[in-house]
Image (cartoon, rainbow, N blue to C red; front, side, top):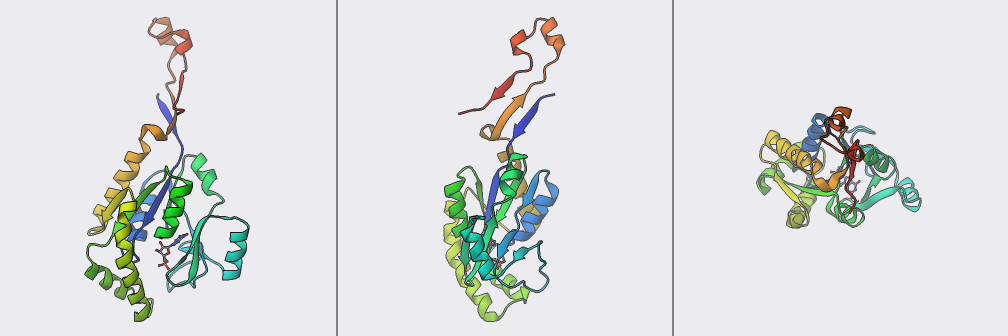
Length: 226
Ligand code: 5GP
């Protein structure tokens, strides 16, 4: 059997609030093997229905600032509501080494920081199907005041112009199509030669006896060092 050893990779997903990032990413992580979502830390209050350790880890501003000092974040940013959001570094590297790919659902500032640290990451931008639909989705959430919703909407307008900094764009018109698009991207990326560390051919002794391969070619390890 031919086996390949692939290191996990980072998948950075951004897009305006209400574009559907979480619904898409949750289903992709549920369906694909060796793909997990990183849970961010935030200093903002939990919204109705959100859960500690599921949506975010909720900590105070002071705790967040201590963690910044201790270099515990892969990246962090102050997002639209003047609150901190950050990706905890611990575990991510470990998981990548175990061949697990990690999805980071983060804002554009965070994505650009990750691009500096990990240019091999893949960057996916999720668009709403239209600005009208986005406004409807934000209002329909009913978890925030109208004023906050309008702030998010204005920010979304600015953010959409940044899509060219990403590798892929998914227009989330239909949730199941968007999920399939993201899965297709991840599966293709996983097969890229430059993501494969080793290939083990595990050839059988018989091949040597039959003179089909050299002894020294027994159990070869092809290293893709560049
Ligand atoms: P929300 O308050 O709607 O949950 O998130 C607000 C914004 O913060 C979203 O654009 C979301 O992608 C972003 N965000 C969530 N977690 C992180 C993080 O760990 N780092 C950064 N830079 N942005 C994040």
